[in-house]
Image 1 (cartoon, rainbow, N blue to C red):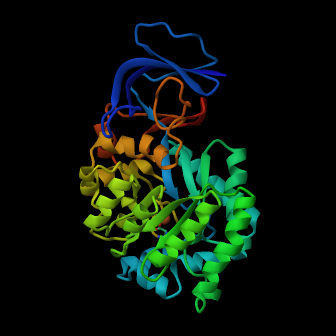
Image 2: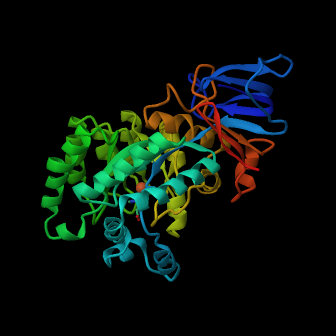
Image 3: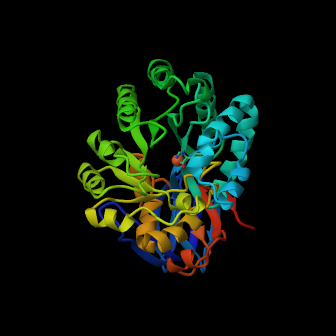
Length: 407
Ligand code: NIG
Ligand code: FE
């Protein structure tokens, strides 16, 4: 199988060896792909080889396929009622304490059949591809019983095999304390450690383990305990940290050398320094701050100044961020995190790939790498955030195959 994308007006990509925020830029080039691998980038005057599929990209811009390194796509019912409650002045925390939020999603998830949830998840996957996303990290976390967490992870693994979007499964059993353990949090943590983790590891259902470390959810000590136990089973750590209050999650993530710490809206200066030193990747989710109607955003510029490589993701979930549009996140990151297009492109491609330990195969347009590509109908990189809220995708390519075409 070969693919030729001809006459690409602009090609922008991060690359191994370049500093974060610096891109390789090429104009009027042809990209030749065979067997899913980028074989060669030809300059406009050169004659590339014949290919089975040829796509003309005159006037268009090619970037690496986007990687969304933090999503919760396996849920049942949506929660637009809570969105309206927030519009009317209730906070996310108040809604959760009153029995809404994650726990309401859990009740509904448990009622639904695996096949029903799988069908819904399949349509969500199509939407990711439409927005140019070729890989996602996908969390469980709406089951919170052994059976239902396994159900979520099975859905991710099974769908991974049957369609083009690549999904990296993360076990998020520590997303909340479920209703039946409200009076026995120790009992729930023991269930995660003694039953869920061994089973999930034995069946190879997840690559990472995540914890919602936040006031009212899991404490720093509980989070550390769960993440260290997960690591004994080969699941590396990601963590929801310091989103709603400065809680010490970032410092702990640095201490245990987690792969990522995510959200970080309320991170302390010490947390930033610790993460930079330990090489923990901050995964920032400004769409969540926006959708929760809050004004304070994660201090991205401070993190960049401290030497962190920042990733950006949607946090797609039914409560705090119901979007799959990383192109919209791009605009929010520009306006609210004051990140520049060159930094944001890193944040949604090569750095996101690094956060998943997949940067040797994914995240940049370089000869020898997997051909995960996104062709955009934009005249230059600055335009993407500027003409906002629409989908600029022309084609999405996963492993050398066109998997979405905007007619
Ligand atoms: O990343 N913070 C925890 N988890 C999600 C919210 C999930 C939900 O509200 O259903 C988040 O924001
Ligand atoms: Fe999340």
